[in-house]
Length: 143
Image 1: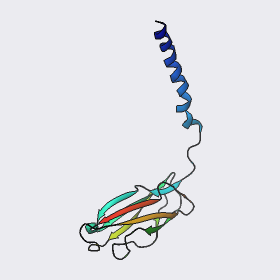
Image 2: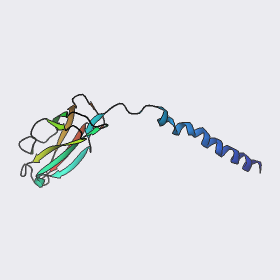
Image 3: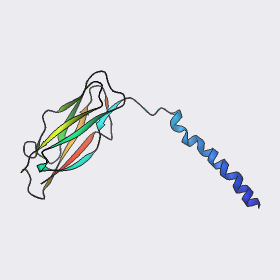
């Protein structure tokens, strides 16, 4: 009987002790301003698909002016052989949260079963911080 009474007293005390852990997010600042990043971090596409749009997003409040997002390319895919991209930046219009980088895939650049990858990396966001975990997008282009 004493054990049951002790358990009945201890269980509510354990829940009360956890309350401060769950309220931690309410007391601490967790948002440090807008960031830019890719909506997803990767995709697999066939070279015969024609085009693939990679979405860049503004995480946070929309801006009153355009945000120019600069990016670089890397990976084993070769520009002009496997893909083309016009330019090295994309603009998120004022009052919007997203913009697309259009990757034009070149059919015939790979043998059947072959694969290369294209890595897009955000390098600058015209005054908006780049989200560290969302700054790269990897496209696997398959033959």
